[in-house]
Length: 167
Image 1 (cartoon, rainbow, N blue to C red):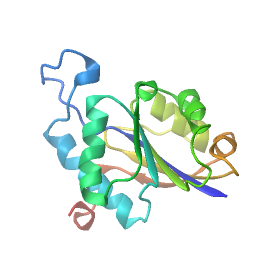
Image 2 (cartoon, rainbow, N blue to C red):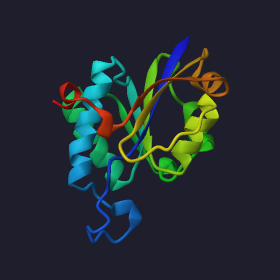
Image 3 (tube, one colour):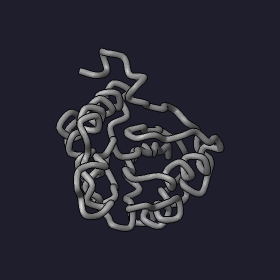
Image 4 (spheres, rainbow, N blue to C red):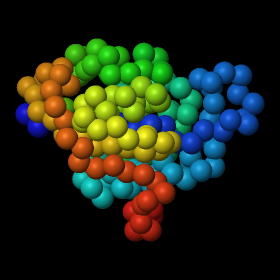
């Protein structure tokens, strides 16, 4: 079965927010602007997820809320295990993902997300805030697919989105 994994780094956070911990840091104005733009681009590319697994950090929750307001909500799971996670953490969670899901969005943080994209696609590229990479793979289950080879289908960077994808 063909599968798509959307790997997205949270939108830009507010380092000057006064949040007591890194985990509690909210989005800044640019982050609140970029998240819906990425959602619009995913919709335009017909890459809206069937389900989302996200870090439980405030900035990832706010990123997904801004995206869902544009694209519509879907089953969403906020998990502390995805806070500062990497490929191994995602691979472990994927064992619980229903085989019926064709497209999953994982929302999290660097450096783990860049390394995961490189491992799956064989190509390293910087994953700055609010960037999303759509990868395509094959497998009867998500675990099987994540053990295989993936190709990069789309790389969404907010700064490169055209005006029509921003509305």
